Image (cartoon, rainbow, N blue to C red):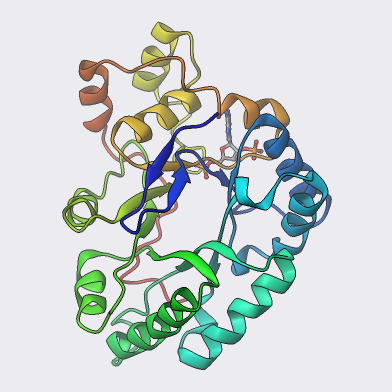
Length: 280
Ligand code: A2P
């Protein structure tokens, strides 16, 4: 079984989650989530914007796994910000996922200053709806995604429940040190989306060399590196062998020297998305 982290509110969360960004709805999502659950993943990460909640809900229902053993995350899309719209969007996601409670709900992207002069108010109102759903016991934990320290600081001005998670792009070459340090100081768990740099890290020579020393793949080294830095990796794959491979990271430990080497790798690519300037 996969070890867990404990969130600031005491909820436990499996340390590796199954990512589903860019996994098409229909058979691809259905079969990859089924494979993941069979392989031992118990933590599935989706989002309304991924468009695959229906198939993921079906895979969960078909699995027959006890609901209490699963940890399911989805996210509020940007068009649904605000108090009332958030409450409605949550119910829609729950219907699609066929769930009666959610483990973790995240604000997918902060409203940013480039797009909205009243971005702070928009995020505060969205968060107020998250707090209501949390206080009503519809959700076990609430958090944000792609928030930078200034977005978190602004949210803290009106929040009565602090976010338990911040899910950010995190992989070798993209450490987001300021955001991670902020989260550590505020007891916010960092989840790593695209821990393989959307696949761009897989050919890196340094990582290839390190991986060979452990008899592991570069993907496994990236996932292990996330864990040893205290973050929660969410590797995405639709390929059965890779889905299994990405969970097989509990039988080796990267040395401090190798952690240092990987921590110092330069940026060679990732999604290229910047929370301060995205316009979707
Ligand atoms: P696929 O889904 O076709 O198997 P990230 O999680 O950083 O966004 O990376 C996802 C990308 O990396 C996808 O293109 C995925 O391909 C690929 N990928 C995932 N796991 C592995 C692996 N173990 N080995 C090689 N490529 C992988």
